[in-house]
Length: 116
Image 1 (tube, rainbow, N blue to C red):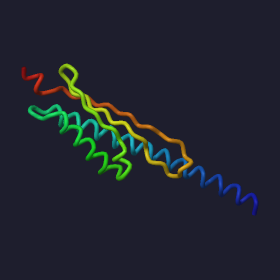
Image 2 (spheres, rainbow, N blue to C red; image 1 turned 90 degrees about the horizontal axis):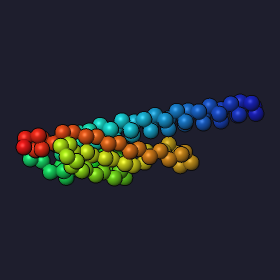
Image 3 (tube, rainbow, N blue to C red; image 1 turned 120 degrees about the horizontal axis):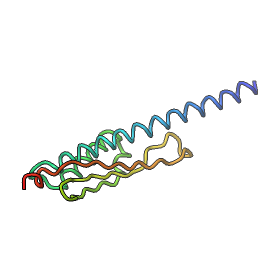
Image 4 (cartoon, rainbow, N blue to C red; image 1 turned 135 degrees about the vertical axis):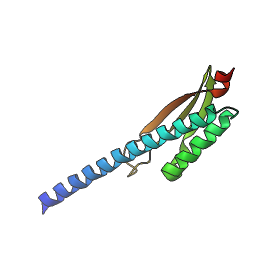
C-alpha cells in the first residue's frame, strides 16, 4: 500500500509537470501569433500603432482567456518597421508551480514608410 501511494504521488506530479509545460508552450505560441498579427495590422498603410495593440490584446484574450488580459502590449515605430512586444505570465496548473514569463516581439515593415 505504501509503495503504491508513493508511486501514485510521483505519477500525479509527473503528469502535472507535463501539463504545466504544455500550458507554457501553448501560451508562448498564442503570444507569438498575437504579436505577429498585431505588427502586421499596425504596419498596414494608414493604420495607427494602436490598431496593432488592440489586435494583439484581442487575440491574447481569445487564445488565453482571462490570463491573456494580464499581458502588457506595446508597439513602437523604429525606422522602416513596426515592432509589437507582448509580455505576461503563463497560467499555472497549480499555485505552487513556478512562474513562467513570456516575452515576445514581432516586427513588420511599415507600409507608410516604404511608400515614401
